[in-house]
Image (cartoon, rainbow, N blue to C red; front, side, top):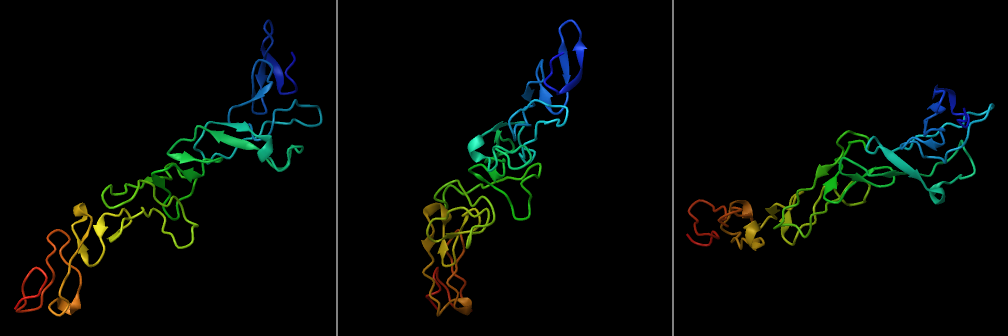
Length: 210
């Protein structure tokens, strides 16, 4: 049977259906398996099997397509590769499913091929300016997983007010603590009530009364 060099026998002599090898499929073994399109399909010959080559999708996709414009060596069967992963799963994206989708990040030290590499950003809707956080390591001066915080807001998820501010739900108002009356000259106050930490014998919301 005609199997283009990718089968040693047929499974049905009447219909001549090839039993494909070399990561190929089809009645004539004339195409690559879904995840084996890192190079174009080629027929096998007696001196070279020319098997279909698997794409690197970091275990997050079941199929890929070949794109010659991305292959540094499109005329070579042994070097380069133009595979592009399709339908990335597990909240991943990118040519190799190596990046996290918007709204997710890959924690430091977690491999792109981890079974669940991406964690939800969970940016606080009140304290952040958007739902997308820093997706991965490698950006100078940025912390992976950090959400974009509004002014006077801090925390990875932008879920608390910065020192000297309180009441996240109202946009973090200034504590206005009287540092002469606070313990250690602190400018911080209770995150909910706005009460400053007063010295002994000092009182008032802002520690400005004896």
